Image 1 (cartoon, rainbow, N blue to C red):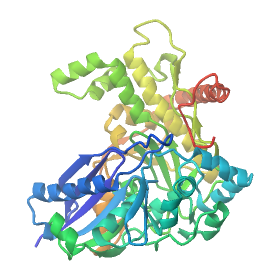
Image 2 (cartoon, one colour; image 1 turned 90 degrees about the vertical axis):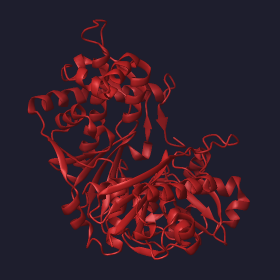
Image 3 (cartoon, rainbow, N blue to C red; image 1 turned 45 degrees about the vertical axis):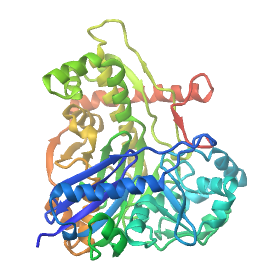
Image 4 (cartoon, one colour; image 1 turned 135 degrees about the horizontal axis):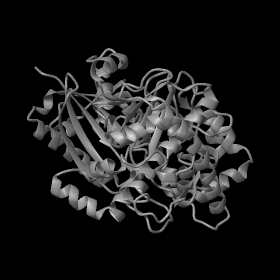
Amino acid sequence: MKKYVMAIDAGTGSVRSVIFDENFTQIAVAQHEWTHKEDPRYEGAIDFDVEKNTKLMFDTIRQSIKTSGIDGKDIIAISTTSMREAFVLYDESGNEIWAVSNVDARASKEVIELKALSDHIEEDIYSISGQTFALGAIPRLLWVKNNLPDVYEKTKSITMLNDWIIYRLTGILSIEPSNASTTGILDSNKRNWDMSILEKCGLKQDMYPPIYESGTPVGKITKEIAELTGLSENCTVVVGGGDVQMGCIGIGVIKESQVALLGGSFWQLEYNTASPNIDKMGRIRVNCHAIPEMWQQELIAFYPGLVLRWFRDCFCQYEAQLAEKAGDDVYALLNEQAKNVPVGSNGILCSFSSIMDYKQWKHPSPCFTNFGIDSEKYSKATFYRAILENAALVTLGHKKVIEDLTGSFPDTLIFASGASNSSLWCQIVADVLGVTIKVPIIKEATALGAAFCAGVGIGLLPNFEIAAEKYVNIENVYTPNKENNALYEAIFNNWKQLSEAQTKNSDNGFLHHMWRAPGI
């Protein structure tokens, strides 16, 4: 009998179930888009609709089995992954009573109140957890306590979204370090809950499930879920992890000092370390990797993928029509045009994200500047290339932060997700960073990483190292051009000054911040 594993991936914009065979070749996928409800009563409040999204998730399981043509009972293991920061609260009977998405931003008042407790409370918590109040669960839990006291009083458990999927499949409440570390409540060194953090913040200490490392079997599918989905009661459910960490496993970034750049709507630079190595200056987000006894220094650039989509939709209707007629992708056409634009985009600088400073995380008003009215030098292709270069320049700033913290940076980087489909963007990143860029064949690797977890959990794979060696293959390699790298180093200094000036003008209220963390 052939064996299969399934990965359930609950992202920000969709949920999907993906089936892999025993050689970890994807054989079927089913996906549903979903949206997260704004609560008009509270500014920035974006809930997660548990009941509606549960139905969508189970439908993807059924559809993927149908599409694959296999018997659902031949799926012997499932693992889960999800957007980070989203979490679910449960009552004593295990009913979900409140859930929130990762993009929720309702807790600005609570951040201010927390900082009023002590001038150094955020620094103290960061020194333990590697997290600030910018994205963590602590302010939102306090928001529930302040605004929904009945819900807070009834709450007996909390899980992250990937753990919620496990609960829905097995009835077992559990949590794992890679996503739980984003709450700000874990001691990063111990990879376990820290009650002193909860005491500092005035949160109750009795609602935190046991923690299991990724790749650990948790339980079996319940009879009810087996009948509902076509899965077997003998199917083992295995701990997965946060989407970024699963993506890193799926592209083989599992060892100390390896580095990944995941280029999607946001760009995450993930540097693996054998200890938390928490930055005393508070610039870097420190997360538990989904690999036991491994951590990640994370630096995030805001919106590179979204900025490119904005530019396409606002200014490139003609190119979109040409691409459609040719049966081509509009980005491929724009990339081809931008190849002829020289390094530095004829002097254009743009700013859409500042270098990450986790303790004071904000991004200034975006801009293009230093261009003229010569239509040949300053065409759409020039502005397009400037956007590509901007994302790489932010990443160079993040590389320099890691070098400052650790004293080194690898000479090779694994680049994955949507941006790595662009050979031009890959070469720009190589030239700007001055490192070799390797692009794996499977670029959207989050589900594959979860499938590896399922395989490890049931012994189909002995460990994650073997998974990477056998099933992660490189498609393209880009080596840096030394002359271009020298030019980009000079451009970076100018770009950094522009970003700092934009931040100052935004702080002074002359411009509006593109984004800033709650309470800043």
